Image (cartoon, rainbow over all chains, first blue to last red; front, side, top):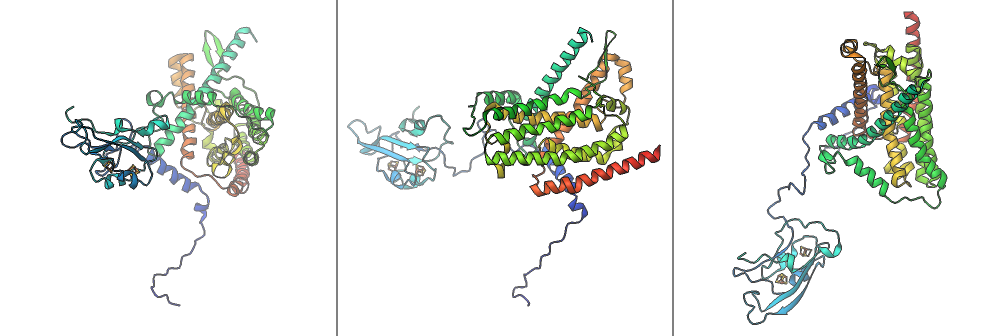
Length: 165
Length: 343
Ligand code: SF4
Ligand code: SF4
């Protein structure tokens, strides 16, 4: 019966001829292919010394931003922690005291802010959730380490360097 | 035999032993580098310049790993297995002629540990002993994967030894001697046996791959089906011995192939070089040429390994029994007829 689309094609499996059954010609052509690769330039990038160029929207290590006066932007609202699918973020809020206005932009700030880099999947949802534009995943690849506890990054590693330094 | 002769022999044995160990060590490095180049990578390059210390690092790692003997294994045989494998791998080099006789101070020093008149048979004996290491180890592990690997190794070696022996018989018709030293001498000039026995050489080459358990015949350690094959249960240096034995075997079978078919230490223009450089440097160049041939073969072993996928088990048996053996027998008949007609 004629098929509707006329795209049907009858396939036949040809029996192997003598040369194909003898393996050897196929093996020789295979050897030629690998030999061609032997003289090709390796595509390896020697990672710690060399780096592949990252895309512009590469998501790396988080950094907690400061505003134009050098005060920390984060107000410890917890939206980032709430949005995080990996539950990687924890924080403790504290109230800003008198005289600390140059340190913290809002009246409430994060006294402790920790991201567990082993849990984090670098999805960037915290960045999207933040109403204060306080967190960005604009850093490098998170470096390797020996102990699990060393992957819990506190404010010492996350907060941007102060402005005038 | 004088004391000096014994000392010379002893020194030669030690040198050959060390050379084969070092070559086996650096074969692992070469294997990894060559594999990398075939796959457009760079390979190990962190331990020392260009990763040249990698074998030492690997060896150190092997020694320091925990030594595990499974509860249900037979401890004695479990240890005998790898020991036998490395022992048989090492003694094969005794009959290989590494070079022409050297003359130092009027004294003739043969660069061959012993030129027994049944050298080829000796090699065969050693090669077939080699499979016992694998078999005993796999069986003593008391693990079904190891056992399967061991059985595969045994059946594969038996099947391919037959065609290897048959391909050698055709060679013996041409050479008329079993001594490896004499065979190497006969190939002086351009009388390389590969020119008289091309089919025999290809058969021998294929069987050598099978006997050394190299890809495409590495079914005894087929990871996809058998975890690690016969050495699944092995750890630490006992595993190291198995892996090491494979590389020594590769070196020895390359040396045997170079001796039997590719003229051993002979190279074109050899007489001229020996006449001009004297009886010490001349043979040494011959030895260097011999090693170059060996390295080419080792490279070929690796090249094939990183090109061809593993055979299926039934294909392996088909190839061994239905193709190689008939071909080898036909080769004997043709060789015999041609020799009779020419005489
Ligand atoms: S990048 Fe994703 S997973 Fe990582 S901390 Fe932010 S929200 Fe959580
Ligand atoms: S980083 Fe942004 S979202 Fe997270 S607590 Fe601070 S202000 Fe809120």
